Amino acid sequence: MATYHFERETRTPQSETFIIESDGDEVGRVDLHYAGSTAYATLCVPADFDDDAIEELIGEIDERLVMSWEPLRDDFIVTVWAGREVGVFSETGEEEDEEDVDAGNGNR
Image 1: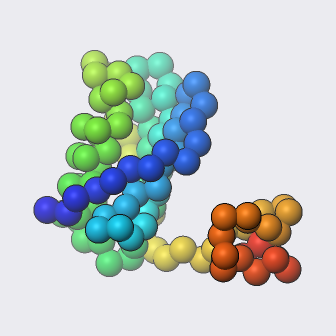
Image 2: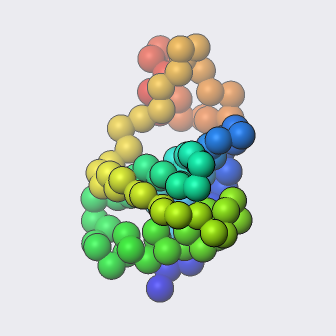
């Protein structure tokens, strides 16, 4: 069983975004959206995550993040994307805290 750490990246009254880490490495991200008594998530994981690993991670997200929002929610709907990170893009093309950003195009 993997140990996951969730680092909040953004938060609004109806949504949150978390970077997912395991053993100090980024392994994905989850965007949570709260609408009434239903929580929706878009979960992005590496292509090599199998169904068991995805289900385990969804359980951790539910227990540690979603249940703190609404323990008596009606449903938790998760869309899972498996692939690889292509980059981080920005209109300014600069990320002050990222050393490996190509300032010409904002791609990391």
